[in-house]
Image (cartoon, rainbow, N blue to C red; front, side, top):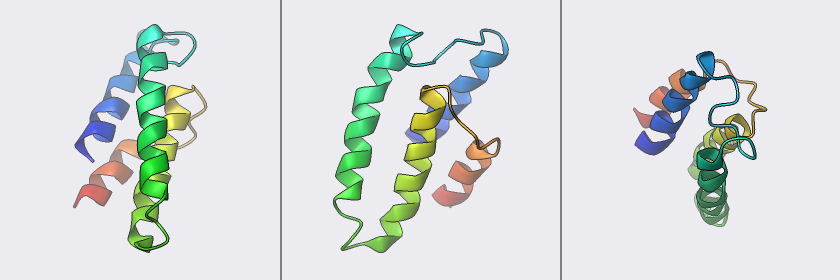
Length: 85
């Protein structure tokens, strides 16, 4: 869960640049979207056998929403940190 934690931490750059790391506005964010989608898809295929993985899918989907500029969870960093423990 270290990678999503770093990603969401980088999103704090939006305080300086509102369109920073927003997919389809920032090329770096757009490049991050496809690998994130692939990880979400991969983990989702294993949720039925391992239901505890759903919480990771939920966090990663929230990270995806943040990349798209649609995030709604102001506590996402805290949630990731709690999940990692």
